[in-house]
Image 1 (cartoon, rainbow, N blue to C red):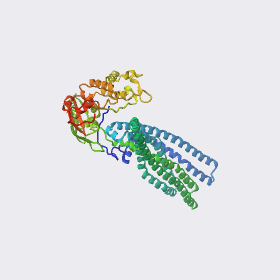
Image 2 (cartoon, rainbow, N blue to C red):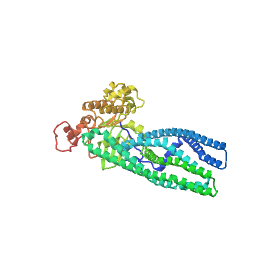
Image 3 (spheres, rainbow, N blue to C red):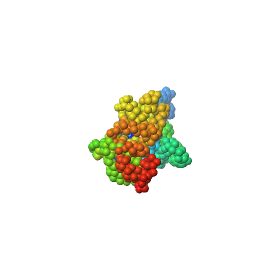
Image 4 (tube, rainbow, N blue to C red):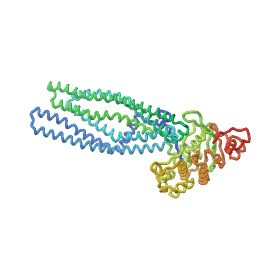
Length: 606
């Protein structure tokens, strides 16, 4: 069962792809997440600052010990200072451990918010947007990218933040010891600044390309796996293998690019660590020789700068993960810019009646010419309309427009005078439901799969819906409605899954049902039985059937014949057969009868 909405248009970087958030949007989203848990974030900052301050006591007290010994101080004084160093280290350990605990709690809560927000945004996407972007991209964003962003919040982010606080405190301590030595140390860090700047200019685009390559690979693998039988039947294995290998090569090339960036960054940083320490020792030695600073001050400053290498190393080692996580977060947050379905009818009014009007509709997909060319059609409430025609005539495209999945390029598709694509999700499900031969069984029980269509339905109503579509197999399930479906549970074959989807239609109880070859996966006998059961259940409601079996057209009130994106014939079955046009030719061919008249076009098939 498919029901979709259409909202404002997104502007992805490549037509059809889901958008990616820019830096401003990512920063704004990150700030919003922090504001949702301000108390925990502030507490985490406070404990990190206290841990960093406790870590400063060691070098300072060591400098005091050196000066005390130089001045002839006793063992007791040295022991007291040494105990101070031990106390500072212990305090730093405890404070840092608690700060990390707070950071992990903050990260897990924020990750939960990101996951919930992603699910809400994904469910709000119109089906047409998801189809054009590809399930692989959405899947990669909802799994790999969300997990990577969560790792940043839980591990990488806190590590970098703690290290940054420590680095600021250490530099401040060096300046307090001696401003000249502090300036010398900062100047010695310029090599790290240049190397990091070079890396950051290139890293974001490289990691976005890597994420896009992974999405494309996921799409190819998913399509190959889901269509494995078709691949074997049409002998497309070599072509699909070649496509997969091409996408794998693209992934490898993208990863090689990010590896090259890291191979330049890290060696440059390792060399730069020693420069500020050497510079401070050299300048400190000169100043000590001149009597400007004490030996303890020089040693403490050198130890601070040596200690600075640890937080800087953490920051720079993690900067690769930050860039990767930032790119993933940009892809996750990009869903905010994707089109959304309207929450209310844009016209500000509800449909008056259930009459469907299609007026001079033209439609084309992103690539290719017009699929529908000036289609006009009026469907009366309670009417059964069958739509037939050759493959590529535009039947399924028309059904998508009737269901509000796509919006016509020109012309209008309305129900009760309101554009179908402007209906809110709740109203749309009450008005129109599209059922295709594509079906999906959700993880969970049979009851869970059915309650999607009607949350308040009773068990009796669920069982009645299954019976209505001929799903007799449901009676023999080991746990009835509580039977788990999917991997690890009861597996439904194609026909059973299709009947489950049709049972959801019965429960949804819409005014109009569009059946786009909805019984194609059923054997002819089961399909006929299911169609008769549905006809009885849906009596009095509008049914538009994209027919591939002409018996469906025979039972309809009217038949619309489509060819080349146009409705070429429209009328009751008997009248069209008597007219001896395209539909008559198809009908006679279906029954193996010779055609009675040479005029009229062969429609080619339903």
